[in-house]
Image (cartoon, rainbow, N blue to C red; front, side, top):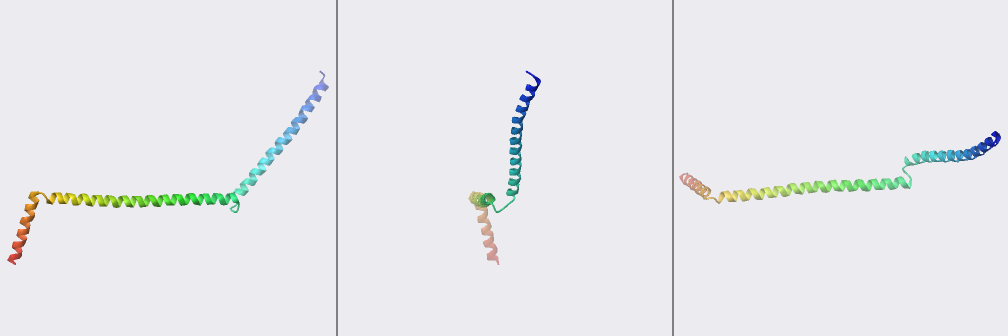
Length: 121
């Protein structure tokens, strides 16, 4: 194989490579321009995509706000129920304490003292 034939083959290979390089360069240039275009479009608020995103954001925000409100109401209800339970416990303890014989005797003696003091006046 002579040097001229080798150069001719290299030239033919490089031509196909140049075509491929051109297509690759053109493809990358288009992708870059499309990226720039998408960056510009992403900042616009009047596109269908932007309106969908805004609607979805507002829906999620509403759901989060509703969840926060439900949790607040649940916490208030829990505090109210705890207060009721504590009131019932206090009432039961007082009734238990008042039903003891020593306490009954004390109350009756106090009542007798009050009656005696009233009669003296």
